[in-house]
Length: 502
Image (cartoon, rainbow, N blue to C red; front, side, top):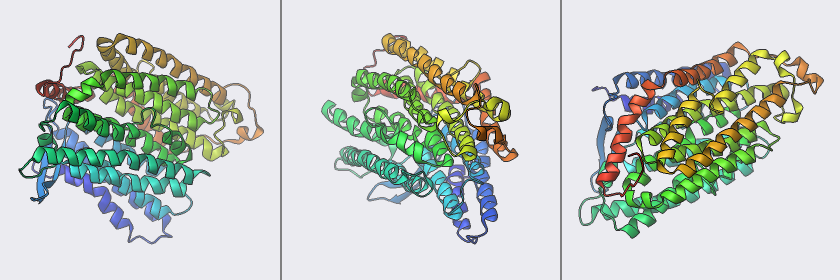
């Protein structure tokens, strides 16, 4: 494909953002329609990307490389593989939906809100398709700015606290990443020219001590983003205070950037250190699964419960990635997409009912099945996806993760299976109190069901939940070759991967 498809996908939201600058601020309907139209363009382009993607190749595809500065070794280098392909599709698929979700809920600063969301889309895409470490770092940092303002301006009562906390945690992680990045680049160069090319940096010769310290610096940065214990405390506050659209994009994509960082940088660049850290990462992943589940259970706020469930679910993702075998890593990559759909949809449904009742407290609800049956059905479907019911996308991902983890470390997989049960307990308990039983407040009897616009947002997400759950092959076959390349690269680098079943 000679067309620079990745550049088109990457820059089309940014061009749309610039076009919105010329639309009058008070023309809110025109702004919304224009933003929605501009958000459709990268999705259509990403479908073109998917059609041209070679499912047999585990290497970067659609590579674009233009040198920016020879002396510094910085390039405008783009590429996509099985690790990033479906995340690109997820971003471009969800952005039009979150604009629709916010259509009638953002009542001030509409122009700024839409501009920030398009800018955020472009920044997230840039981090995923960057094949140059410096370019990745630029987009990694740019993602923070629009999210900071989306939560800080349109968030809840404690939005300032949540945004400052998120900012401090992220800057803390980025500082470690920057130091480690510069060390690797200068170590690789030696007396020669500098380069930030990711594939070239994979071959950097490092001592075991250097690998250990550098892996730790990268891992801290990415663990903050996942988030992993003990760097998780910013997430529940950010989710709780964010507007619905902000929670959707935070859960669906931004958390995956941390796992993507492990797959793209921390593990393949420092394979021996990554393997040495195996017992610690596995232990943290299992603790995250239990901590997220046990903390979610007593939460009185639906949104905060879903936020803590994300901590538990991302523990499963890291468990799959650190299984270090074909089945586990493939399941972990797929589960990133699954979590984006199911948890994003959960935040969406909580947002829908909040706009009607202006409360997220579970105790304020009850008897919704008879009042808003369409909402109740869709809420049930996304809840079942979240607890990994067979036939939904969550089941496929968690099954592969646990199967891969059993081959690597049976005790970790066994304990994590208990986490699956706990997830079902707290999610179904929440659903029962919200949807069934008596109507606890008279105002609940006056609630209106989902509107056509709201259905236009949630139906595509539910459709994808069942498409992946019932026919995952097209997704898996585009992930597996990249996983094979990832594992082979670690072995070629001399990493001692002693894993049962490999």
